[in-house]
Amino acid sequence: MMFGRRALATTTACALLGGAVLWWGSDGFTAFTAESARRRAVLAEPRPLPAVALEDQDGRPLAFADYAGRRLAVEFIYTRCDTVCYSLGAAFRQIGERLPGGDPALLSISFDPAHDDPARLREYGERFGADGQRWRIARPRSGDDLAALLAAFGVVVIADEIGGFEHNAAIHLIGGDGRLRQISDLDAVDAFVAGLADDA
Image 1: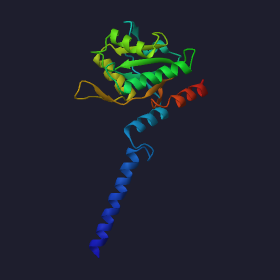
Image 2: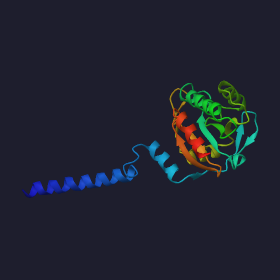
Image 3: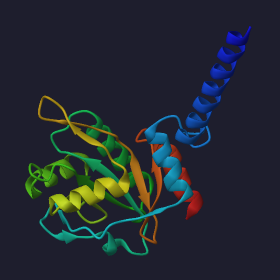
Image 4: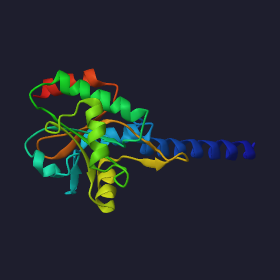
């Protein structure tokens, strides 16, 4: 009888502890993946972005400060990617076509700067209709800048065994105040566009 009570007490304590850990780790049972937690955190507290140096497809310097006062949609790609990056490029093209007038500006950032020189960035842009003005394709100028970008946006990049990368893919919205405000699914262009129109 005593053994049964102890077992019940131990089981109850473990269940309560496990529930508390799950509550904490899932943001009150609202986020069950790291990706959903990342998105909720940005909505709750928009993130400032690092002052990193970028270079675009024409070799021109570029910084987030250049977009001060404007909204900016950002995607992370690498030009050798023949899967999800194609979907990202297609989503950006749709956003550009459906929101004429330059708002938001569009920026594709390569996380493979050693391979993605301006010529390759330009080729990627031409493939999807990037005009080099409203929609620019860029790469970080240094490894430190790349690390700072990935950390600020919460982008995870893992080299695979065939020369490519596994990475989370999304459309990131930066507000006119220069803060990361929203992260959307790449296949949710309709909702992203509608949200921008409502917020205009």
